Amino acid sequence: MVWNLTNGHIPAGFFVPMLYEKRAPTFEQQAELLLSRGLEADKNELIGRLVVVSYYRLGGYWHPFLDDDDQFQDGITLDQIWLRYTFDRRLRVLMMDAIERIEISVQTATFRPLGLWGGLYRYAVLPFHGFIFKGMLKKLTA
Image (cartoon, rainbow, N blue to C red; front, side, top):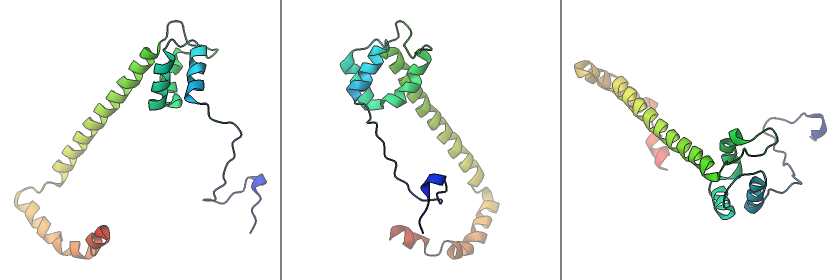
């Protein structure tokens, strides 16, 4: 069956490779663009940071410092943008740590057997484990 790709009817899961004419700019070209827009930075340091983090990732952190003409406000430096990025990265790590601690506390409080009734419940459902999880360990280790 031949699909007409011009009318917008593409079946779900059908992969259509996209051909791009425009080449991605090099790190040096990205740095030159930022410097031409008024960012105050050492070019080599800027290229190093772009290699590590990427132009588009950092873009969210310098965007508030751009005016309506996509020029940086006076006095904006790479260090100011980098401080915002590193602050956000550290905050994200701290938040994930806090969320994990809360999750583990809730799981522990929810699933911890409580005295005699917890032990009885565990033994009452034990026969069903063989039925429900039959062959699971072998499939995981295969």
